[in-house]
Image 1: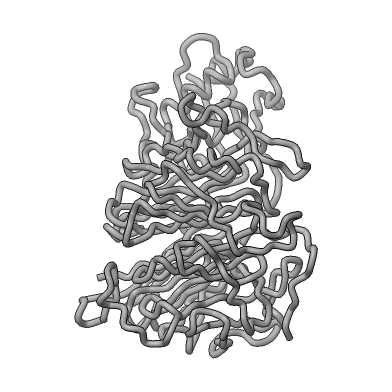
Image 2: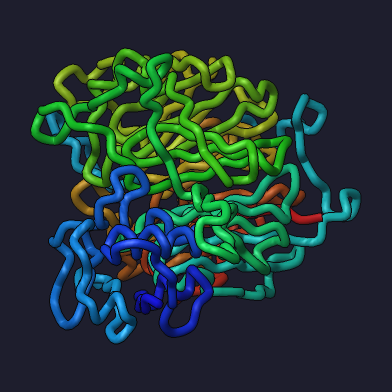
Length: 98
Length: 431
């Protein structure tokens, strides 16, 4: 089970408390996790990555195992600790603006 | 003090009645609503702010107010508007620089909200919808293939990129049909209550499209007006492209900017390129339009075919909002703002100006409004009028105040004073 931590505004939008847990088939990549997340919570479509290009929105970051994975390929395998659920996949709203 | 229009000024702004007592209730489409006779019970004011939405409700006296909110706290609510066909149906544009666009819908007068088609799926991939916030430009071979770029700030051609919904205009007859004005400028329509949106590509497809360019607030389509006497006729306004009209329900569009004169563009009378801030009409006389342009207050008596300036004795004719009295088609309201470089009232005095002669002759309305040390702005979508017998006028400020005048502008009072900056104000007259 993949654990995903969302920023507060997206938790409110998706009506979830705390972490989201998802089953991801196949290789665990950013793309696979986000596909599963949006399939389960369609309201999040377009909020983390662009609807059409599927590129990460500019002020969204992805943190994994205390590293910034925002600029990694969406198809790179995520660390084993994320795939096993030991560590969460964190979606972060960048510190920007007021 | 009259602030003069600068000559040769560069575009640099954001966004953003006739004879008194005319009898209009007998005209087609008239909605003059007399309190007792019509069974009206009050008003619901929909306020979009920089940090959430608020709903302000009162009975017909409009003296005691109930405030609900914030809804969608922390998000920018560019606009909320109720359906004329079903006042319980309200659409809201919820946006964020971080998380993009969300489209919210209420079917119970704003008590509860939903994102159409965005419900949680019991199982992953069951039927992923979540398209209520998808505004995809038409790229079809038939109608959208050539609509690839518009002019950018640096003079180069730039791809159209969706940024946000500025304005939502529900159909006059169908609660599930609504129009959305977006940035980069285009108009979309939903016919299923906001679940999906489709572009009316004929607007961008007008052969001037590549010449449109953004104002300082972005290239936004911020005004949508449906002619109550002919629903196939729709007006839109774009900063900084100008005003456009369709007479065939959105299939084809034409610029309606003849008579506009803008010193900040190379050809001041060009077909497009004018920074129109707002257009308003009285539903009983929809051939007459009033416009607050970047500078200049304008009037057209022929559906926008030709405009003439009616700024008259205004102390400055820069501003964002304009609206028309519900029952007096020649009574018009504006809030003069000092200049495009100083977005606040002249001399720190917040004054609404009213013309009862369809323009040119204006009087300041000050009773109940701050007349010293006031340096707020009133943005383009932040004024509205109700339909009660004694017409109520409303506007919101970037200082977080929402003011009401229950007597056509003679007296004003704040409904709320400390909201986040107000982006939009709409009012529903409830039965």
